[in-house]
Image 1 (cartoon, rainbow, N blue to C red):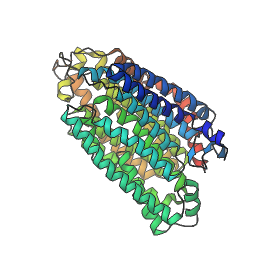
Image 2 (cartoon, one colour):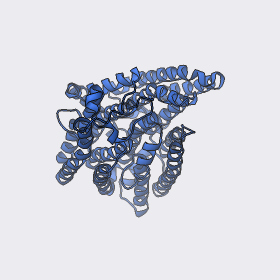
Image 3 (tube, rainbow, N blue to C red):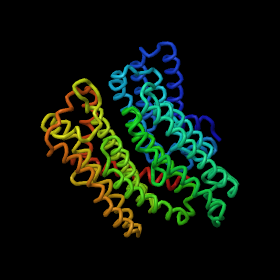
Image 4 (cartoon, one colour):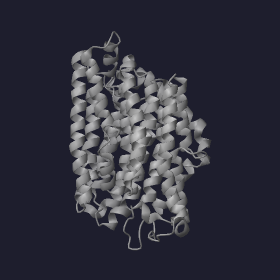
Length: 487
């Protein structure tokens, strides 16, 4: 093994590691008054890491040249694509967080450091080529996430969110670790390439149980049914910038990891896990849609929306083809834009005293008092519902097209039918905003950064977003191809 080559391939992780440790020292010496400076430096570190991974994505890097440390780490185009989405989401979180936490006098210097280490863990997750690397990245991300969920220490809801996330996250990690142990026991290796080769000759019952347990642990991380129970409570209770982070970066990392494990390590036995993914996909679509209908809190509604969208994304995985993987990655990019726009809009919902408004009923008639904000929320809702000509439609179209091309016409038909159910609760929010009598509750001023991020998100998900289809499609195709040539 060429150590210099391996160290070069992990340059983004080295950058974030050094930045995190240095910023931790700055936080220790400077205290909370240095939180703004630390946030700015953390964003700079994320931008630098993005610049380091971009060449691999643009060049379509794949194969043995992207392998580091005896195949334990892959710095290919697939990992680079996922990392850029993760770093963008983390940077956006750091930009929107100060205005929220300063309202509660709770901005701490540790917040950007935790986000940096969480992003580092997520980068390792999507680059994992070995079960041990997978678990290291997963736990590095999870340990930071547990603290972030309970970051508002004087808020009971935040404490509850952190506790629930920790307990259920530990359970899921245990299930995943048990599945990894079974897989190692029945294949004799922890490397994805070795597992793939060992399963090429056939699948034993023990290895099958390993796949099932690993899928169960990963389903928790992506908040897919039936392991979704933590999502509404954590989304509602966690501070809104943290919820924004949870809805974007960890979602990309967990789905990227799931793709890497299923298509790399277990790619030779796709028939063994496709039926499970089919069930999880359809169940997430239906439960996410039905669960959102009765919600009165907009953050809980967005939680069920995330479950619903994960179901649609998993349609691409069920196909188990490069086209399906490319469709998943394309959908993920659009989903990140929609989620950032949605949660930033929620951060802009404040009453005259600066208190955050989360009850959907209090948004009545918002179009007549805050027309620009109402338009932004409406665009996000229509895009999440997949209504053309907004860009969210294209994500759903691609995964359904991949399913049809892969011979899974019934799956595509059921998914399309279920998406009609999901449109109901999105349209309900728009109806309340545009057609109900004004509640005249949302009167507070918004931070300039919130307005800017919402504007950028709305431009991306607007019909102008279709101008990105050729460019983004070429990137997702290269990333998907790298995933199928990683071994």
